Figure 1: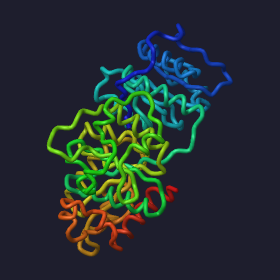
Figure 2: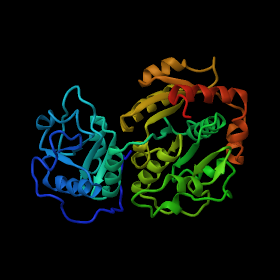
Figure 3: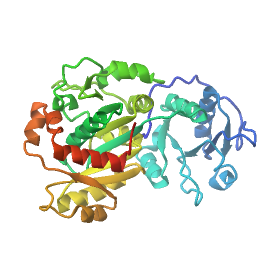
Length: 373
């Protein structure tokens, strides 16, 4: 995240090479390293790398990978590999097959893999990812915001952080990652703003031009947003593949993308695995801290910090809560009177102008993002 499941492959069928343990890579090249003993998985990756115009070395296990691991531009590890080399960087992508199920994400978290690709569905994304790795360009940060428990205030925090970052001059995108949340656009009072929503992007495949994405999305409060429709009718299904494609374009087009992640395993797989960093929002309550600590096991292995919501002086100590959860404290989210009503009335941006909110948002951005400009 995704981390990546792309359901629309642009890669033509057919294997590119008939190699086995080692495939078409000069010893001096820092190309793609694939570690797998699975012939079917190896064949899928070989044709993807060939279509992307890259060079691939395949080895059957981590011992055979040792001489090439650190020099490789990208390390792909197959789902049949259960252990990694000590003191080496985490694999760039864990690759597996559709039948791997939940085990794939559990294994990725245990390995610290940066991305997950389910093949053959993720072929188009993986080809684009490998192509970009050969000529990397500066990209923005995807910051995920999620509640450590229900009703923690993640959406409110995400909106205030996006507003603050835009106020500081950054090019910001706020992304609604909860298809069952009722539509983030309602909290912004922007349901009539012209531009694309998630269902409009349901058929996206391959790669999205970041400039076109910026031009197509609605804006409010100085930032762009991508929301689920705020209406009663059921929204069209948007596959995790589309999420990965859109967020890749967002990373290339915006300096900061703030992702309001929905709760639950499905939302985490579709959205959380595309985040570079994650902030957990937790009320200053013991049960909430316990729930947040459990939630960490479902999150991808990226840098994660904590925001404690409550009134200073009348809550559990924020540092103590962060220590009990096991992640550093980014800041304390103030209890602003009328926030619930402001959410229902679409006035959260007005509440975000208050001095106490601005101080909170500035502190969290400084801790979690730095200067996104």
